[in-house]
Length: 181
Length: 225
Image (cartoon, rainbow over all chains, first blue to last red; front, side, top):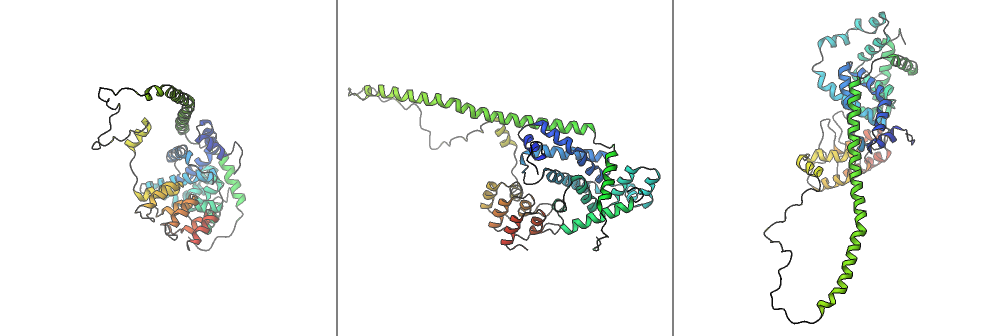
């Protein structure tokens, strides 16, 4: 955590005191990381847009309650994680059969995308194939730049479980994307 | 999950690949989301600024009026000193009855009306706020570290280990949010230091994961396992 006037923690403090420009800087700084975290989790742009809006509105609403005992990004990704979990729970029942088949069918996995030379689609599909907990841990680490301990606290898991999830996730992704990575 | 971890691969190369592909990814949140969020945030900021300047004006107004009030009181005291001797001089008893007091004493049977809230925002809060159930209020106070509210709730009959939908007690929420003083208050009142959440995470493990040695020590003093 830095003490500079431009740090995340300083910006959220300024916003809590009424400086709207500070919020905009924070938003633009972390917009894409939160977006990719959500979009790669839910695999659906419209839902990711909805969640994105909810996450940042919660940040704006609760800015006065942010206590700089933790990094701003830890707080931000905790909000994003909780919103994502709630949304996944709510929508689990509505997940279409078609989508489930797509996830579980290896023929429509990253190899098919390889043929189309679409690295982005291959990456998205590979991430989609990870079990939810592994995907969450991986995205929190790579997009949130969070430590294993921080991810464990956010996901309410043990250190060892989290470490294991991260290891499994990377191994699986490397395997699925070996023609690219 | 398989208990045997997979072989350890150096993650850096894959992470680099992920970041390279992500940089080329044109996918972005829609412009309407950005607009909605930033407008909402700006509106909240304006409200906060207005609230602060209103509070500042009230304080400044008090400061501005203070000398005038003291001046008026001093002038009144001086006038009193000059005029009072005239009334203290002996004079003939008055023939008319004593005047009734300027302010009649209120009847003991008539209760004094409750003072109205001081401003519109407070009135609105009084009208719209719904009380939380005690368990929720306790958890809210614990996670926000509001020790005053926590102490007030702990004075009454309350289930210290009431849980939310995820099986988290007030103690667990205080730990997760790093509220050491709330943790101390809850433990002092007998909160269960071993009440795990629905995923089996114990308070001690949560404190260790949050890297809070002070909370870990407080839990261990309370015989948490």
